[in-house]
Image 1 (cartoon, rainbow, N blue to C red):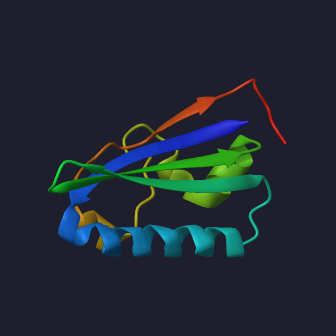
Image 2 (image 1 turned 30 degrees about the vertical axis):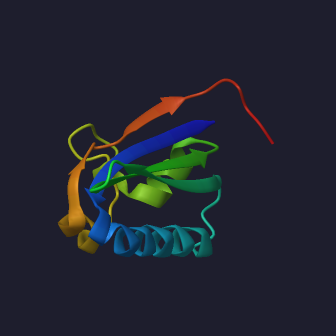
Image 3 (image 1 turned 60 degrees about the horizontal axis):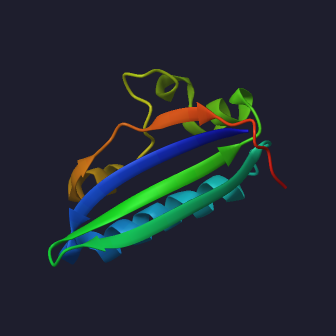
Length: 107
């Protein structure tokens, strides 16, 4: 199993719109029926009174599924995150994303 993990932060006033955009992207990816795309989890937590952090964890069966989801241009360290352009404008900070393989497996 391959995990694609991403973190981003936005202001409290933009958090609902960011979440809407992330949820729409996840729904669209699942609707594409990508073979090997297992799950997309999006978490949200408040960081004090002014900031909200999002974390996405996307589970894939293999690298072919990652490529089908992200596209070849997102398979390098230079540009691994796949983010809606409208969300990018709302984010205060974000990491480019990282991938890790896990031998733990799962259902």
